[in-house]
Each structure stands twice: as structure tokens, then as C-alpha cells.
Image 1 (cartoon, rainbow, N blue to C red):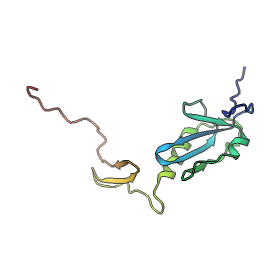
Image 2 (image 1 turned 135 degrees about the vertical axis):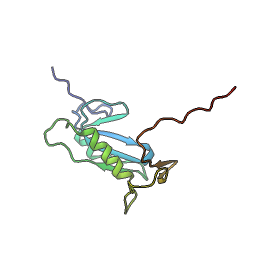
Image 3 (image 1 turned 180 degrees about the vertical axis):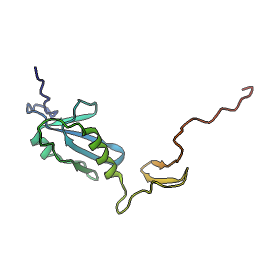
Image 4 (image 1 turned 45 degrees about the vertical axis):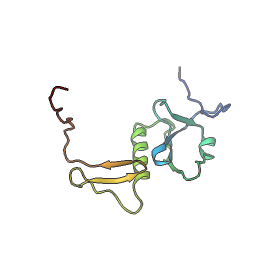
Length: 131
């Protein structure tokens, strides 16, 4: 038996064809093809509600192209992540991946990106002592 996911909007009985995700840190709403799995904090929308979607003032809506096969694609999560990265990228430029170790990168809100060339993330040793 096939279970059809329904639109998350109250009283809407239409089948869902899009998934909406909010990226609060970037003030971005990402609307893409229906995700392969139901995820918490994501909303499945029918075609009508996806088309009429608006975001709060100051927010950006990123609309990914719908999958033409009619079902969820295998790259849905990667496409959402790429769209969020693209929306977070500063206008007119890209962050350089070759920044020296420990250099401060782009700042977004209260967060900052710190780049490191070292793949090992071993925490520093604790000093020994009497307490």
C-alpha cells in the first residue's frame, strides 16, 4: 500500500509535492522538491500552497526547481544544503577556501566561520594538577 504525503497546511487534503525548510540563522526559506523522508521542522506543501508561499519581511525565498519525475529525488537534501550555502554567500564574492589556519572568515549574525587547514579536531590536553 502506497502512503501519499499530504500538504501540511490546515484542512488541505492535496498531495504534497514540495518541501519547505526555514534557515533561521540566514533568514531564508528554502522550497524544493518533496524530500525523500519526512523531517522534523520541515513542511510538505501542495503545488497551490507552494506557489502562493511568501516569507516574512526581510527574509529571502529560495525556490529550487521541481523534480520532473513526480517523486522525491535522491539529491534532495544535498540540493537544500547547497541552496542554503548559496543564500548565505556574501553578495559579489566568495569566501576563499585557502585562508590561513585560524583566520576569521565571513560573519553572519552572531556566528562566524573559522577556517582551519588541520583535519584533526582533537581537543587540547587538560593540564594536570591538584584541582
